[in-house]
Length: 492
Length: 129
Figure 1 (cartoon, rainbow over the protein chains, first blue to last red):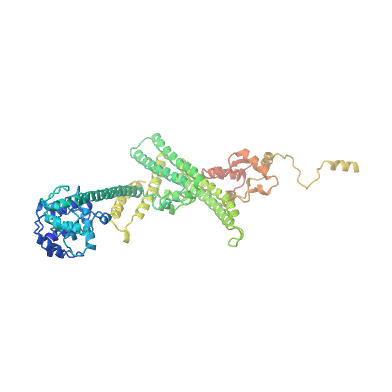
Figure 2 (cartoon, rainbow over the protein chains, first blue to last red):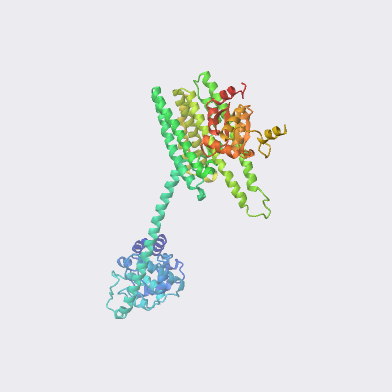
């Protein structure tokens, strides 16, 4: 019972701070020795208990608290971890509230427990010998404890000192027995050592708690970052993984993120402008604003191409779905026009013809650039492999230098491709009325917005091994996000 | 007779035979070359962008006259002259249509997209419907 209780509490307290409590549980543990036997300790508590019983130790509630802290000063004891692993085994048999004084803090318990642990390993059957703890004051057992070996000490203390009412560690209350005198010198020493051990214990506990706190903070930060990245849905698996992203590329990615925020704002303006049925002049302002918005991204790409053209070409700055349709670092104008022809209505025949003509011109230009790029790639292959590759013919430095010269040409192609995209958008605008142009840009913005949303959805789709509530919630949310925009498409 | 023959020969400079050139000035040469055909492209044989522009015109059904500057003995001069004419880093390809300067790839593509290239070609006689 009591011992079992002890065992339970012992088991439940694995942390340093918990030690205060369990001892309360140890109140009035009048466990019979048999309880101790159940603990499975390394040594036989039975004998100890017997001794205790023989001693006629009475355990009181008050004493219980004080007890177990018999710090058994011993050189070896200070090596122990401050938190006993087998606290329950000390079972202070319940009775062993060491009358030992409690140390300054609960960590005294730790010391006791740890010492107890040691006892388990090394002790021979308990013999109530003089224990080193004599802060268990005023107990007959104290005398016996003093006789114990140092290793025995704590255990003894626990077993014997339950009755220790002792409240203050320093006091040597003794019942005025003669043993008190003997205890003085040793007691002082042990007190000091116990305090030392307790202090160390406290420091370790403090360090551990601090570590826990900082880890917790780190965890919340990580979760926030993850949330943010996921909500953007853009940079999943982007080149940032592995830290291979260059600074120019990183800067462009940041500016692109900001451009996307601008995009949302422009879209909102377009939507609002159309619904509010603004005048043509006012709409013209909004449409021109949207064109400048696109001019801006082409300008940014031009700057980025100078520092890291490969980043633009491999499309790591776009969402995966957009990347699927990538053509020389961006969208293919003819594909965009094909989509628009399907979605835009209320066009005059002349306008339709003109837009088909625009698509034709764009196709021709795209074909030319594609073929030019093909030739560049073929020439690059020849340059890099050039000369007897594979055969011990040097380190290929010469080839590298030649290839570097060719790489510069990639920038030209990205630049021309962006130029084509920009010219196409401007020409579209010229072919349409203001209202039509506003609707056209709304369609374009929505279309790419859907591609980005698709990328997020796809990346967070529930998979067999990764099904979590978070995933399904996010999917639902994103589906809801996509849905409202469909209404806008239908007006076209 | 012989004297006259000798006198008539004295005007020629000994050296590798070459065409009589009225103007050695590269700019004038460019202009002359540009006027000789409807569509004239100054190019460099290894330049991939030049390849792209050639494919663009061929794709449209135009047969341009291409002058490869790296295969011309005085190509360097022409290149420098073109650079002065246009500015910018990449000087080739440069396109003349109907003797008039259109520009580099940038301009040519912009003209094509905004629909002014085809009329220009038709006007120069390089395209028939």
